[in-house]
Length: 361
Image (tube, rainbow, N blue to C red; front, side):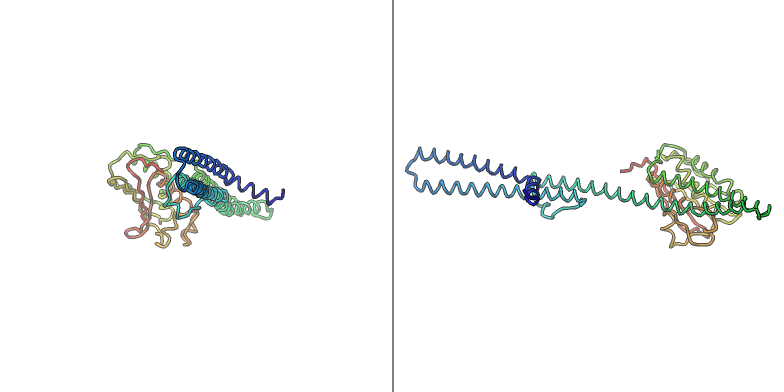
């Protein structure tokens, strides 16, 4: 038996053709026997019926046509379902013909269930592809971010090993190396949080807690940096409230925004924090008197590893992931963040948190 013959037989078996053919024969046999029994009884009761044999022949022929039409309909349905399954096997989870929407019956219901299954598989596939691409992009971005401080440290240590370097130069290189180590430590900590957030290892657990205490915790995290630049962080008085939020990560989000406000503001300026309760959510605004953000960058600053191209931004240390983490943390809790221009100068970050626990679908 050649391969073509084997392939044909296997294809027929996969489509249920042989099973349907046997069913056709069985139905044909049973229905024909019933017709013969009926006409035999009629002949016994009334042997003088006109056109008896014509009626019998016509009934048997009509039954054969009817059984064959039923068989072809079932066969087409099985071919259709087999087509769905073949498309699934090939990775096409959106296969569908428009005529299916108008059909009724068990096969159309099976087709509809297959479509739903295909949609579920499609979403799963898209999620896996997106996760793979995000992982590749994350690894690439992390490698790029680590390359600069590692290269700077390598150069410093190579120069320190040079015997021609003076003690003064050695001290300078050691100081630069120490600064690079601090930057690297900060960067690796930030990237660790980012990678854990991307991998779903960081879980947000909102609980009823004081919003004011969370804000104070965030302010304490940047107080020393603000004090070094003589920047005053002013929190306008508001009535404290119990809000469902993850205190640790929400404080981290507020602290990241405050850190940027301090970093990009001149000495002896102010950073203001305002809280405005609304009907179903709470607004938290952080306004600085810094360099501001161009409007064309508003949609980009919350992207991972994005940093502005202005010299004031490039001169400050940072990895461009702080605001990305802020957005992720707030959105995980049903909140949001946006940026607008300050009233006179600087920037206002408007963050929103819901008053009731957010249930993610």
